[in-house]
Amino acid sequence: MPTTDNADEPATGYLQRKSDISRCAEQFKLN
Image: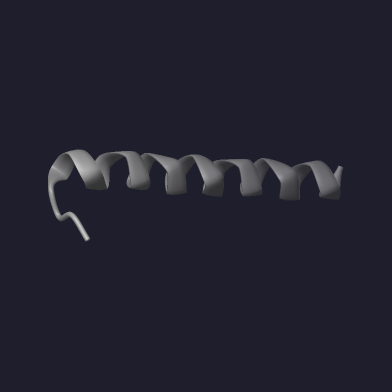
């Protein structure tokens, strides 16, 4: 598995975006 910054950055950004989407989805369910 690559350990370069270029390989980690996209994965981190994807996970961050994924958590943001989950948070939005939860708020949408509550409303």
